[in-house]
Length: 553
Ligand code: AHR
Image (cartoon, rainbow, N blue to C red):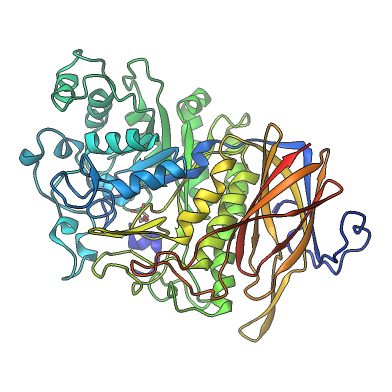
């Protein structure tokens, strides 16, 4: 397992990195001295922020489904038809728009038929992730009982008000099984044998599932294809899919981080047949994990990783550096796609993103790939969501990997215990961006200066994004500096603030975390900000994420 591929076989808005010494000429609005400045350009629209940029991902992996989402109808843990109630309550709060399921790598080993019909008749199957499980992992993580399948997942989505996004198996099932899964989900009441089977579970009306992934990581665990081979498979799996009046948005399996050849090879092959084939592709799914904290010493997938909770400031900046690469990846893949799709009919989807640390910080020992988020991951997540907002015109969807008990979890749960992580709080703070009009921002702040293994290094001082809903402006800002606050004046070009409320997530200890026993160590604080002469003056604490809700006159 040498690298991820083997393993699973800026324009930064405005002035990123600018060294900004104490600002002069802005004191008209403020009596206190500020060291940073933010400008929101109301008349420079970037596009509408698709609510789906705030999407989620749940895979049959470790404790994500069994224990995380699904506790079972007979459980003493408060549940709604077997689904963890605390989770449903939280996801309603964050206005979860879409959830991807059942994988990940699991998807290309999954037979959807195993997960339908009476629960007690469903087969137990070997989970894709079996080899990674340990003696401490429960049996349901190794041998999937299939208690949670299509019906339960769609029900979960209904409970939280989200759209389901199903990933089809391209590696180990024929295309006909993809058609049948669509038929099971979407054929009208009483029309087909599968519609009748669906009705037996109480769902006579079609689920109308719109989003379908055609495989997952088809360059690796999803079939080990070349991009050309995958393009041919994509054509075959997507040709003449029945749609039953529900238009289907097909998402093709895109590149691993900077694998430009995967993007180029796929699109070249797709248009070689006929450029109109591009019309059948809704999204091109990029995956980017930030995992390598070795500062260039290794690319080994195991050796390069760092710890989730034991880290120094250099590791803090390093994971942010690795994470912010997603901005260049969006721009780079967009450019390559444009070589073949000049009108950019196909948009990008980032259907897996987040930091990935080595094992050791599991809230529940035995849950593989579970890690405990800290303020570092809150800052990472805020930074990433801001990047997505700033590229709203290129992106259709993004799904954080993963929702619960896995990687960049919004929530951790075990039996009757449940906790919202700092990442979960960030999603709540950013929920107001969904459906807003993204506006261009210019950030000017002193950059972070630090020692990176004996060499001077810098990282930008403040970054963020802004969106407009009528007279309400939401500005989200990340201060990555581990020790220094930033005092900023926020001016609105083309508008004027009448009031501003700031919600801030920060902690004096960058290693702080919410645990089952201390659930509120890192929680957001709300307070009114100073508004003078139509501008907002605000101090962004060190290592913080802030959401400023500004009302315009
Ligand atoms: O999210 C964990 C795994 O990472 C997914 O199963 C796979 O798609 C990716 O490599």
